[in-house]
Image 1 (cartoon, rainbow, N blue to C red):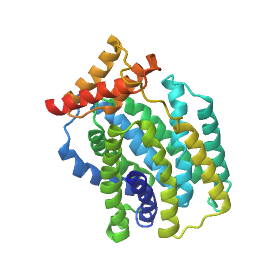
Image 2: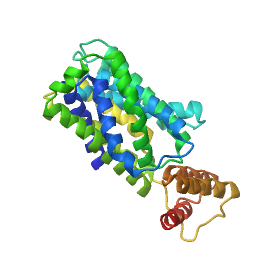
Image 3: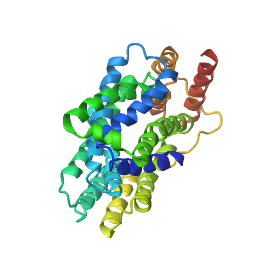
Image 4: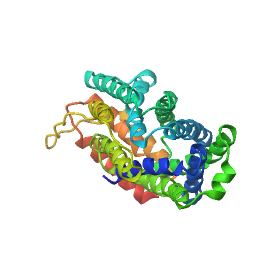
Length: 344
């Protein structure tokens, strides 16, 4: 429950911080603070730096530059609804490039999410034209592309990835701010406690604490049980926008938000799967064992524990034996995790 609250409040505080900092500069300061705090606690991932550079460029610099520039010209409550397109965009890209399959529930969810955003975009309060909407939508698409790139560095632990993405993103964002914004020096000199408070919250709480908590939860619970809680993110952000920024909600905005959230629910929620029968088991195949063992070995080499890769390998195993359920894979991965903790 804490993660959507942390992230939702952060989105609102970012909007408040833009009253004193240009949006790209605000993001550059955020990642600078994150990098300066976290980089001392993680090892440089050998052989992965160039890939992380591209993850930072796409998923950090370009994505936040687009999203925050769009947010600067619209209400936080409106922008956070549009940001929910990250989920259907990620699904569509996984189908296109990773050959994932989409079922009828997910197809309906994608259509509903885009329909809800169209409804919100037609709201009369979006009176600065459609450019801010286009920027936020482009930012969500860029985020989804970034998640595809993240799969190329899955050997890097989540906490280490946050730190090194921040290291690369910070200078990139300062360059982007220099190219596309002005008044940076005046903003830094004249910023008050609201602006610097936003930087501290975004850099330490939203990024460092928020993502650390997110990766911890992902490692402890199945993804299908975790993802539904992210649907609280727009609710939290909208509530914070109303309370802290004095934003107003119209029936059109609320209707659009409901349709978008329902669409995301169709994409992420799954019917409950029956648990295994006691004693049910299947011998794990050689390919399955190699995939999970490689994820385990890579985690030890890079100083992190790649739970995502292990989960993907276990999912591949379960895909071959759908009647088995979850117990075998959970026990197998849990055993690797215990041994990883002992070996490090």
